[in-house]
Image (cartoon, rainbow, N blue to C red):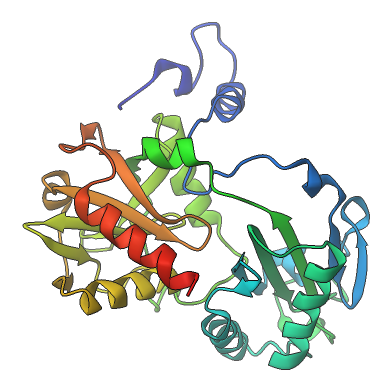
Length: 327
């Protein structure tokens, strides 16, 4: 890994950086969210405020608080063999987030589950599906920041797509690059809040992509490793599993499940501060997320994994996790 001249401020021919960035996207071969293309997704029906509409007709107002300011919350759900993985955990986080920002979803848990079930049934989906459940403060009377100008109701949208992880991308492992953008504490932006606003993480990812990487590794305000821009980060040192303290990283549901499975299997887990140097010297590294589960890391800032992928503990935890979500 390292600097690639194609992705600097300009190419040698003087083309602007955005052209180089677009070219990079076109040849992207790995991602924390890589999935196999599925033609069925072109015809999916989307649930928008109680109506199931064709994908190309699914829309919200330009005055919607989510469009105006990113004022909303969301959850990513995974359907495996007819069952939504960790549904209660996701709904707990959704309603906790809504309460934190004084957002009245307008639907209770049972009604939201019914809406998700209706979306899946309308698309004849039973397995290998990723669902994005999104709630915003609703249409505003004018595009401004004040939530009192959104008299309600909330906007609720559910997008379900056929998504199976690209096995080749997962086998290759991810290349990470450390971003200058830091993860924040709850006094700045609470990462436990699954907010529609993700611009800081998008900036971090753009930095990583410009360096030829697949995902950004992000530090906390003290310089310790926090998380990646869309996934939680783990390393293995001397047979122990290390991950961040939780003060400055996503409290990912998959992260929590993997930690629990590791402890049940007798693996020592440390939620602790650790440095980039310690991550560079780790025996293994991997990330966790809803769509892909456990994905090995191939390199961090140009430092390649010292073991063939996946490493033994990464493989063991991935196997345990995939078995657990199907049990």
